Length: 290
Ligand SMILES: NC(=O)c1ccc[n+]([C@@H]2O[C@H](COP(=O)([O-])OP(=O)(O)OC[C@H]3O[C@@H](n4cnc5c(N)ncnc54)[C@H](O)[C@@H]3O)[C@@H](O)[C@H]2O)c1
Image (tube, rainbow, N blue to C red; front, side, top):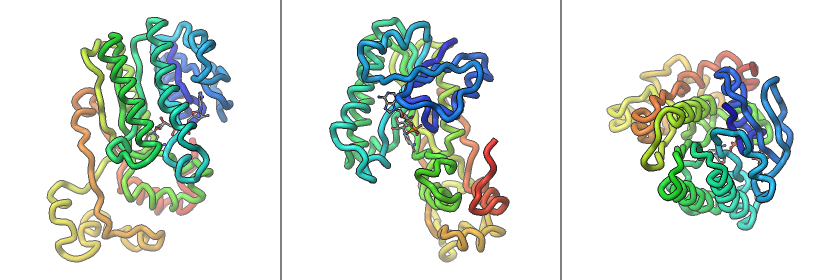
């Protein structure tokens, strides 16, 4: 089936394209900029979700949509985008996508939201809350099957516009994030779910990474001194972590992903253990890209 990826030239879209192709689907990338890679079998349409007149045309023959396009926190913190930009793309853009889909009879949409909706103190988070309202409204009142995914931060280490070195990314992941591959898996699982089962209401599913730490560890964090809980699992990487500026005493917080597990069979695979192994093996270059 043809799957339209709004903003498909971005990080998440580029991870999804080969997965869709491998599953026998045709990814249709709709983006204002060209993708760095366009594997054989994928389709690229240079265009905007804000182009109301053309959007219906872009959606022709597509059976489902992954709505990714959106400015995110980084565009706000570096001053690149203002309130109008956030409203235009994240709010009106979401409306345009859902309205065009509805008019075309496309009833399967995976909407990429964010855990930032829990902290409505930024333009970004408020625009994503409004986007979720729109997605929910179409799910409830237009008989559309909608999965709203709320991932933690997932900008990948190979995005050098954001992370110069692997250790920059590692320090950020340390504070709480999810690997982009796990987010892509959840998108694929959502598409599979939507292809098999009509939903009577939109699903809202939080995505977090994998953890070695148990709830008991978190409840008794560092009872034996700073860094003690870290040593229990990653003793061989203690010095390495410190040398790259990661603080072993930082207590992570886990998010409740039980709904994603229940509905999608979501399994987070990337944890601090993976990160430390990659840091040990590749240092600041990070793992080579496949
Ligand atoms: N990256 C994260 O850490 C993170 C975390 C949680 C949620 N999200 C959500 O994921 C989405 C961003 O995904 P990403 O990380 O792949 O971002 P990205 O910035 O790499 O990609 C976004 C793409 O959208 C495209 N785009 C911009 N305006 C457009 C328009 N008018 N029409 C079509 N395409 C347009 C951009 O050119 C870009 O390629 C957003 O919805 C964001 O809220 C991101």
